Amino acid sequence: MAAYTTEANRIDNDFAKRSASASQLEKAGKLDKAIKIYESMIADVFDGSHPYTRLRIIYSKQKRYDQAIRVCDQFITMADQMIKLGSSRKDLRSKRQQFREWKVKLGKK
Image (cartoon, rainbow, N blue to C red; front, side, top):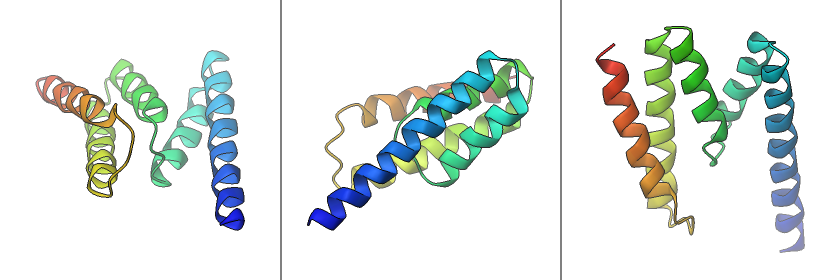
């Protein structure tokens, strides 16, 4: 069990570092680099909402609504999978609903 815990901690630390790096790049105006990191996090099925939210906002500001909708879909799929697996995260259902609502709004643009 110790090996599992060690690996889980390593993965969590990796995601935290990537998220912080992307946020710094975004604040510095280096959106292309931030997007790449956020996209890599959702490709790795990160179970936090931060990279999905940031991508949705960035793509919406860039009027890339198809990309913002894709990100919403990816969050919804991830949340559905985590809920099905019995995740203890209490916020997944409410955040999944938020992403569904954003998807509808983005679809109208």
